[in-house]
Amino acid sequence: MNAIQNMKSWIGALTDLGLMLLGLGIVCALLVGGANIPFFGNVAANITAFVKDLGSQGLVGLIALGFILWLFSNRQTA
Image (cartoon, rainbow, N blue to C red; front, side, top):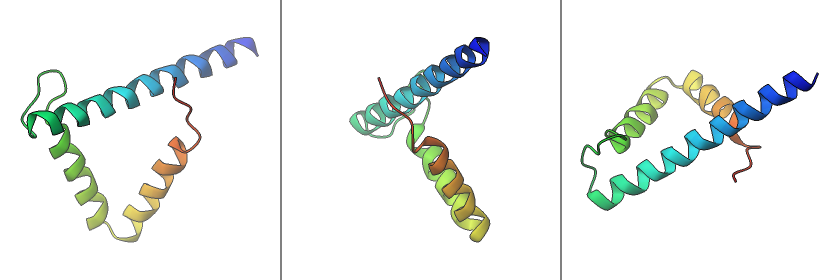
């Protein structure tokens, strides 16, 4: 049982790190003006494309967005 808790802790820490890097990438893209930033790529265009894809799917996209928000709703940042 301890191994499962340890694995959940690692996965949670990696998810938190990914969300922090995503936030950093968005801030860098806003500061630079949406240019293609090394290491982060074109974050603003990727997020815009993701939202556009979800929007074009109608109800399925709305359900997927709800599921994604539910996954990250209880996350605690460092």
